[in-house]
Length: 288
Image (cartoon, rainbow, N blue to C red; front, side, top):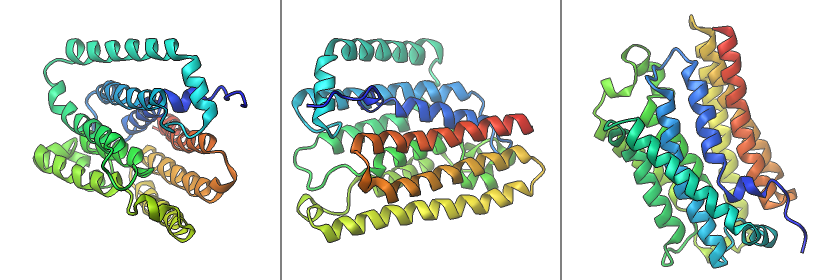
């Protein structure tokens, strides 16, 4: 059996969630279209989501499920069992201490949506009676929906959030929670069952659907790049350029995924998402 690569830690420990959360919060904090009163608040919230995701992933490994796709990573997880459990404990204690002793009572209002996502994630990923598996787009859908609806960031904020400081002043919180759950429902389950997944035709259709989704993301954000570039604040244009770049990278990776090991594809997909956000945030900061 081959020795697991060092970047197996990235997939096994779920490091993509806190990295993407920090990159997104940093980029949004440089924008003038939305007002984020406390960007660190949402990063702390994703510590809790990360702990839930990481714990579920590690438990799958120890049960023998193909949580990280390869036998090499299974051996890697069992060999470093003590270190992994120690990191989980430290992350969980740190996250809970920050949320309940540093952020105050207001945490419960903002933690509701990530909490719902965490519960649904565990249900869809561990329910033995489900017909289909968890969708690869679940993580991306949950991440973007929870951050967007919590911070007031996203395309509707271009119209509603420039003066009001977020979506909360436009619609009630419960309305946005309901809308977020609808978005989550679109990403949470695969549209085919396990038997159909084995058919080559269905798999081809699934890959084409993923490509179409990311193509749509690219088109939408490029349009808003041009719109933001025409505004007074040039820093906002860089935010949308970063999102469009992330969509383009995802589209390219989707075309190349047949020639990549699953773990490498998983890692590169999140790197392709995080790098453009950090780059766009730095460019926005430099131009403002």
